[in-house]
Length: 116
Image 1 (cartoon, rainbow, N blue to C red):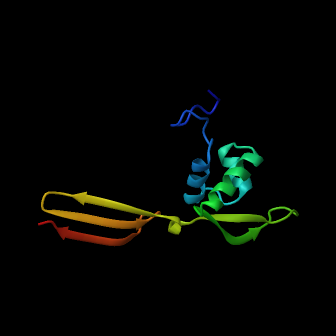
Image 2 (cartoon, helix red, strand yellow):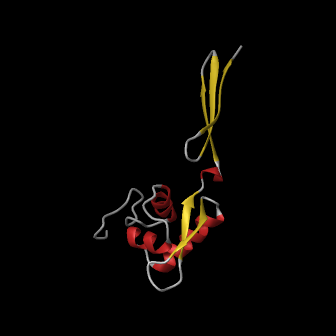
């Protein structure tokens, strides 16, 4: 157990790529430095997780680069809701209701069908 306490998965808070994804998706952090500061993860760990998230297309570079110091500008990341789809189905005795959404929860298809 760390000073931050265990997370829902038994790891210290900020312990995985999913935690970094939540920070980017929530608009809390957009650069590797911000992700490291908010999550408490070391720079190499953040870099590894960001590479995995980029590889899975769950985050994308939004093209913005800003520098708070004289160093190299930081690359900004954004959540990519188009990286996957969610299908929800409610099937009953007389009908079915199906919905297809992107990862941000925007409805792409919403259909109801009777079942004979």
